[in-house]
Image (cartoon, one colour):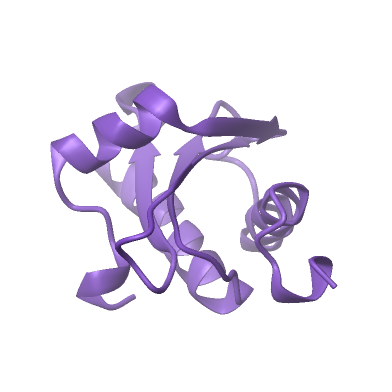
Length: 114
């Protein structure tokens, strides 16, 4: 995922948490906030320490980053993907399908708006 497609600063995460819409299902939750300053979706990933050690948390983030990159989501939004309990035992396919389902519910997949 390229640098301009990531949320990197605490203030960006805080803005999404403060005024974003939320969607949740299974081991994932999304917070989405409109951002007219960007042309592509920007992603941030939140994986808490209670899900496991650094190796487990980084594995979850790698899987979510790849799922987000390949999703084809469209829009001028900031998205925070939150891993919930169960993410640590979910397979890549389960995480990918969960993320795609949530993005579709939010209306961010290109084919869903037509």
